[in-house]
Image 1: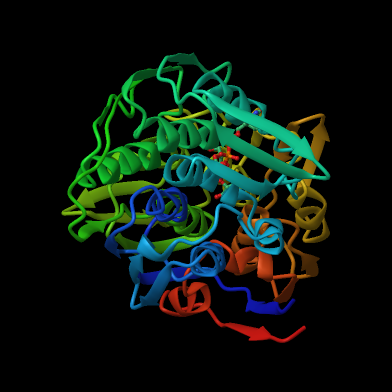
Image 2: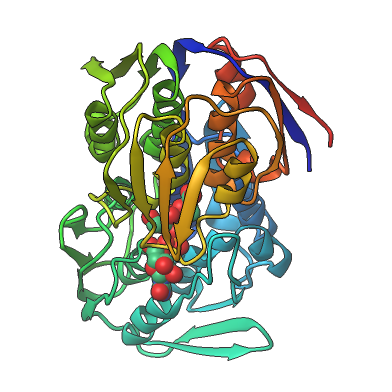
Length: 420
Ligand code: EPZ
């Protein structure tokens, strides 16, 4: 499991280079299955979720090499439609392999991904969309078994702009003759990155980032090697922004597209931080205690992202005033609250709303990471706390943060890792 030992400090200074986006990498890696060919994909983050996805591809017969943030994948060797159950249990987002495997082989068998630390995580919208596109799906003994009878193209209206459902529908529809239109799709930048990748592969997808995605299905004849570089991780960048805002700091956040995380930078500008951009580098300077933010509500993109809720809460625990933070996307994404309270945070929760009354300073404690972003929030809290904190179960954090210790040490943080 492992733990971080973090010495509290009063300031952060230095440069942090942002890696590739976890939530762009995973669907793009899954989509390499659609057409058997070679892919060279750059800026892939070296994190556990990516390694698990690559292990799935390898276990299904693809050849996979991964080093220096470059993945070299050859999916011509895919030899099964069965996604290995033990790996699906490790990474629930492997459910987005459904659409790609169905498009490639006409069938799929994948374990029903259960809930996770942040909620029930239903996949009804995935299944409804795929069924509309001509896929017959049965559920037996916890397995989803899909087969393509008559591949169809049609209009699909998503009841909720689900990221995963949008991706699964895109990955299946791209190869079906005819036009598929997705209304109310997810608009996250990672969806646009997936669209751009699919188009580089020769498919025809338009509208990502808007309320209507149009897919002109086609068979791919050209199977030359595809080269692509994925976008950087806006949530990783936002995490360092939250760390900088929670104490006196001046940090340079490099390799990031500012337009991807405007909703995060605007919160910290309102809180009193000085944030400016120069050539793909965000500079955040903060020399005083930040002001509380009256109300923050998580929403689908371009609203304030649920993946930043815990990190922003950590910074607001030492803000001047009362912040109200409402989690509307997931049903169980406040597990970091009791851990922050152990560090002296003054937080009251009512359902999915947290009322955070800022205190001058937190104090160190031994706390438990319960999920990926909540774990990152505990590190942020520990950075500014009085004394040395211990954060346990850091496997959660390693799922999504590349070189986390190294990047924090580069900002002057004294942080070490212990085996337990
Ligand atoms: C993606 O998860 C991200 N994961 C999540 O990031 C992110 O929090 C989430 O999108 C929202 O932005 C990856 O991209 C790998 P959803 P996903 O489908 O696709 C409900 C992180 O920390 N829903 O948009 O699972 C669902 O229960 C991770 O990096 C249905 O009801 O998110 C949830 O309440 C965590 N039926 C809401 O929609 C469905 O069929 C959002 O889910 C699908 C979803």
